[in-house]
Image 1 (cartoon, rainbow over the protein chains, first blue to last red):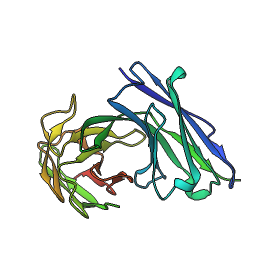
Image 2: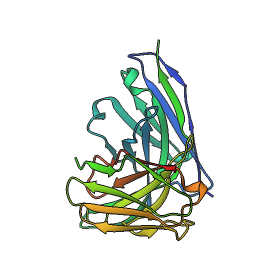
Image 3: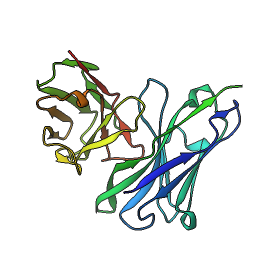
Image 4: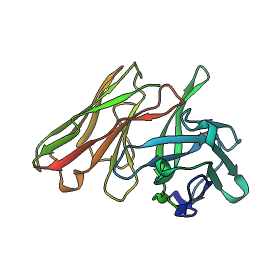
Length: 127
Length: 108
């Protein structure tokens, strides 16, 4: 059974950098059928996609966060990471890592859904 | 960006009854629509993808329908464990991947 586990500081000061890692256990990390992503959820609010990364290192970011986000992958450790710069209180949220299963590709586009999720980690931005 | 709008925000239904949740996309997403269930303190759980295909292990009482811009999640004969928040998610045109704002299904 595939498992994902987020790790990182639970408290970050305003204007500083949020850094999280997602470790993947019990399944394949590399391959053509999957990519990996981060989704966050402010307390009591909706889900927001942050970005996705393929094991090749190709990345796609939410335009609303693109200027502050960097994602990377470490295939040797079966893990991927998120860096979010210049955080504010609005970045306080539960951060989930998740696997995106590629259902199929057509005309150069691939269609994927989040099928496995980590348990989430609360990151609070406060001084 | 494709905006997903769910209705109602809160739905009150008695156990054993049927619940019908709606999701509308601001433009066509074909059948590239998924539904997730989220319980308090838990991550979302994939229920439906391709608008109508149940994910592995999802009970048959969950069904999805629709295409284009209008979609429905139906839960027949509600069980106690079904009371949760449900999100729709389009994966047709991205970035960005977008979710609806959720429907809270509560016990009547």
